[in-house]
Length: 163
Image 1 (cartoon, rainbow, N blue to C red):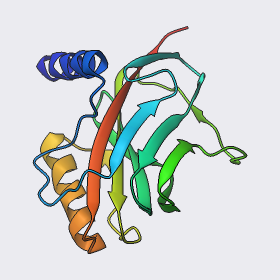
Image 2 (image 1 turned 90 degrees about the vertical axis):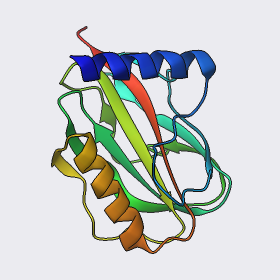
Image 3 (image 1 turned 90 degrees about the horizontal axis):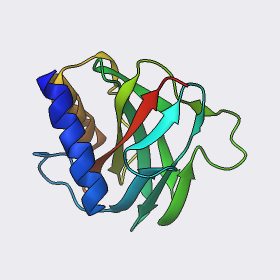
């Protein structure tokens, strides 16, 4: 319950300030992602089965992997990992994609992490239940295994509610 309050506070402060939460302490990150949010804004509310998309802006070309972190700390990759994007503004899933992201259980505050590297995605995978320490260790392993000189890690939030 304490973790939920902390995350809720983080989402509220982020929504008020419009700031992008950078995941720390991840050494050697460079601010490359200048915007990352769900289509209804940071902390936006989605009913079960409603479509969700994300927008993000990159200051340089590179590879992006999206990670979902459910309220029960189940962690998984969203879509293809290590997709190459040019610099500029993007939508995920991209227009014309053969899949759709939908709000699904568990209900509550969902976090989504965007990992940017200037090299293709390594073999490190995100899946299963991970407490905060395990998620940070896996993120560090991902960054180290990528060999990336330029890397960035940011998060956004959304709420999943009953219809």
